[in-house]
Structures are given as structure tokens and as C-alpha cells.
Amino acid sequence: MGKFRFRKRKQKQRVPHEIPIRTMIPNLMTLLAAASGVTSIRYSCQGHWRSAVIAILIACVLDGLDGRVARMLRVTSKLGAELDSLADFVSFGVAPALLVYFWIMQMVPEGSALYPFRGVFWALALFHAMCCAFRLARFNIMIENGPTQPYWKHFFMGLPAPGGAGILLTPVIWQLHTDENTLQSPWIGGAMLIICGVLMASRFPTISAKHLRVPAKRLVPVLLFVMFVIGMLVSQFWLTLGVIGILYLLSVPVCGIIFQRMRRRFDALQPPRPQPQPQPAAGVPPSDSGTTAP
Image 1 (tube, rainbow, N blue to C red):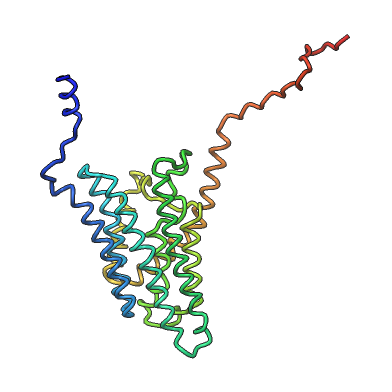
Image 2 (image 1 turned 60 degrees about the vertical axis):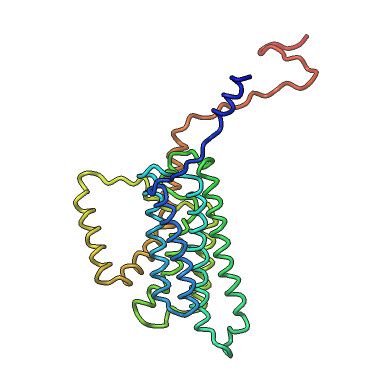
């Protein structure tokens, strides 16, 4: 009896009285990303497009750092994964959709021909946000039950949430660069809400930089190109962001073509599947080949 009680006490897990500060850093970064997304919503309601876009960009940078910091500090947890999904939904689903909606409504004043249809644009904004939520939920499931084919490691299934937000905001970014209202059109904004939402919810392959490798002989040209992009971001920030958004959008069909070629090449290398043998009919005994029944 004494041994049984000792084992029961030993099995009880003790709750630590102190938690290292380093375990809180990734979750704090995720919460800052969510706060930046909520701040973007505030600026969108006030019509401050520049500040709203910058807030989403800050959330994108924090989203790219929190997971890497957690793995570096070896403090990954299920709580961090759930917080990351919620922060992504706010920062890359709700905030960009509301920004584009208010951006569209600025060009649909009371008395215009499109004013009675303003509810349609609100429905498109909801559509984009719901597609982002679906994409994040599917991503959480695919962490353990994702595709096992080796060619999928170079691609995301569907447009990632930060990429969808970046493509959606490309017309707004170009307007901030040119200071013209040419691109501030309800038709352009509505089309971008539909395109980005469909790409996020679809199973279309998009580029993933996690497994990209640079050949040693091309390291210097790549570094020079990266330094050129950094210089352009410093000198022509909005222009560079607009060009990156267009190039990323154009990479989607290119990735589809490359994915199809890689899949056909992989399928061609697989051994042929054995064909199932025909089963004899019930009640009829099998006969030897080459002989007939008397």
C-alpha cells in the first residue's frame, strides 16, 4: 500500500513556480503582431492608408520572426501555435479586408451609382476574411497530415495568409506611391478581394522559400541583388513594395506550371502498380490454363 501511494505521488506533475522570461518572448512577439493588425483596423477606419499598411507590414515582420525565435530558443508550444493562427487571422485576414473595404468606400460617396450596392463590397470583404480563416485552419491540420510527396516541400498549398494580404494591398501601395486615385476603383478592390480569397482557400501550389537553396557559385550575385533590394526599400519604399507585390502575383501561375512538371516527373519515376487479378465467379471452380473441361 505504501508503494502504491509513493507511485501515485510520483506521477503527479509539479507546476513550476517560476517561468523563464525567454519562454515568453515568442508569444509576446505574436501578441504584438495581433496588436499591430488591430491598430491597422483603427487607421483604416480613419482613412489613414499609409499608417494602416505600415501596421500590417510590421505584423508581417513579427509573424516571420516569432516562429524562428521560438525554435531558436527551443520554447515551441501548442499555445504559441494557436496564438499565431489567431494573430494571422486578425492581421492578414480581417485588417487587410477592412482596409480595402474602407478604401473602396471612399470612392463610393452617397449619390453615386454604386452606393446602393455598397453591401456587395462588404460581402466581398467578409469573403476574403473567411477564406483566410479557412486557409489557417487547413494549415494547422496539415502540419501533421500534410501531403507526403517530396515535390510539395517547395510549395504551399494555397496562398499563405501574409502573401494574400500583400497581394491584396498592392493597389493601395501603388496609390501611395503615385498619389493618384486611378487605382482606387471599386472594381479593382473587389476583384482583388475575390482573387486573393480564392487563392488562399484553394489547393493551388504557391512558392515556399523554406527549402530554397542557393548554389555556392551564385552566392555573390544573390547577395548583391539582396543589397540592391534593401537600398531600393530605403530610397523608394512604396515603389519597391508595389513591384514585389506584382512579381509575387505573377509567380502564382509560374509556380503552377513548375509544380505540374515536377509532379509528372515524380510520377514517371514511380514503379507501375500491380494490376489486380480477376477473381473467378462464385460457384465456378478455377480451371487449369490450356485445358478444357470434359
